[in-house]
Every structure is written in C-alpha cells, then in structure tokens.
Image (tube, rainbow, N blue to C red; front, side):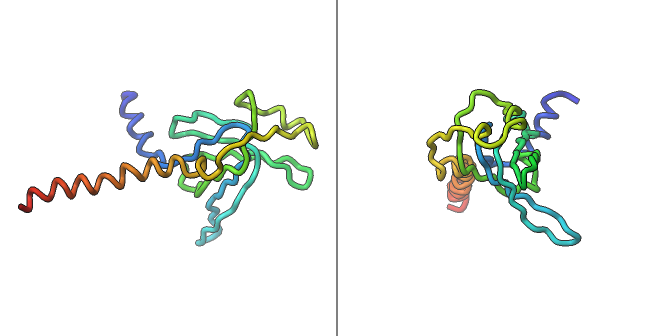
Length: 150
C-alpha cells in the first residue's frame, strides 16, 4: 500500500471539529462509557501533561488529575468516537510539551502559572471553521440546480 492511500484512510477517520489542546491546559473530557446495553457520559477533568501527533488521526492527549491523594492519568484519542467533547477551562504558561515532572510534585510546587485566554473562542474555534464550508456547500448546489430547472 502506498502512503497516499494510508493517508486518505486516516483522514477519513478524523473528526471535522477538534479543539486546539496544548500541554498545560486544564480540560474537561466528556467520554462515552458503555455499561451493558446503555451508554452514559463521564467527565474527566485534569491537566494535559502531554500531546502526541497533533496533526495525525491518532492524535492523543494525556490528562492527569489527583484524586484522594492518588495521581490518576488517562490518555484520550482526540478523534475517537467515544470522546464526546473536550472543553478547555484554564490555560497555563509552559515551555515544554511533556510535563512529566508534575508526577513527582505535589501541593504548591505542582501549580502552573495561569495565562489569560478567551475561553469561548478557544472552545468553539475549530467547530465554526468546520461548519462554515458545510453551510456554503448547499448554496453552491442550489446555484448549480437553478439553471438546470430554467
């Protein structure tokens, strides 16, 4: 198989709208959990300590939180159909992509310095771009059909 065919297959699996997540962001990840025949939504809130392969269909984020004094880390595939929504609640100033040093820290030394950002714009930026071409497509089809009817 050639690389172009593999790239087409991978691009077909990508979601059209994904939030621009970076290391140091505090995020709420809403995930579908299957229990028996039913699905429920579960929210996992924590700090993104690593972002991998951001442009790929296998893009992944590692989210860490401390619950009852125990550190819990989960990795989420950004383009997975089980990941319902990712919302950025806080953005921090960091200078590296992998924040694995946070695992060894607790208390005040584990804090990251906050950075100002427009929360509404960040959480809807990619979705609006993805919807805009889709909204224009029907107009182009209507314009093409109009001369055919006349």
